[in-house]
Image 1: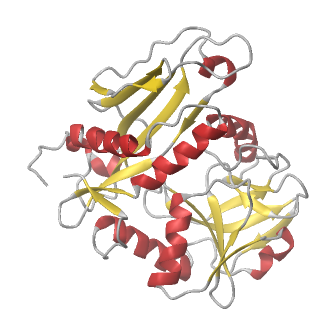
Image 2: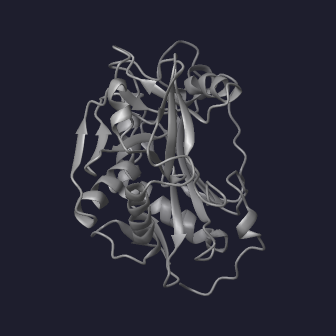
Length: 344
């Protein structure tokens, strides 16, 4: 990496939250086409009071990270997959697709412009990247906006779990996250707004998160408000729920590849029923923020399902998966072709 003086930040205690950096990317869609876009130091957005995003929640986003590797390179992890997922989301929300190759180029520009905010290797911190898009033109009747804005900002973040990932406790929610034929398979902002009441209620009751069953039968595991599930069987098979209303997590798909190709484990995507939860030895949530959040206990309306991996530490199979994927991201383990994009 080129020699860049790092920002004066206490990387070990930065936490996981918004931290303003110097530069962000902006591109506008108008008259049926996207402009080239530009970098700006202005973090504020000025919108008409009747903008489509404000009236009808026409917005979507992605989440990804830039890392410093063990050999002092700055890299991003599989940005093409984020570009593809945002394209799929945009189509579902009747938004214009921001070209996938331009998405990746914009990611590179933002990281390069904020290199001093990429935490040093070994701190456990990273530079979080938030690409997002929203309807910006005034819309009174219920219809798609005529204009849009695509933006990317960056924020350095500490490890999601300071001091290590401790197993969490979930409750089986009485709320539905996503309906069949709805928007559960895309990363629409409205999905997350719908989950806020449920997570606040769960926290009030002493739980860390919700397990949302499928909305149709309420018998199958789907996901939490912001992460996919995986389970480990007694014979060390990795099982993930299969559903067309689950967001296709890039971290989950990467972990499944790692489990099969690096660790030699059998991987299966299938229906997972609430009645079989007690048969698994480990349970985890996977996503960009934490990579893996171990689950120690699930409470289904008073019935406690405690996983043998316990409430003290991540289970052994989950730990191997975590160590391997983070090793790939940090450059300690050779990555599959195309997974790591070097920025500087």
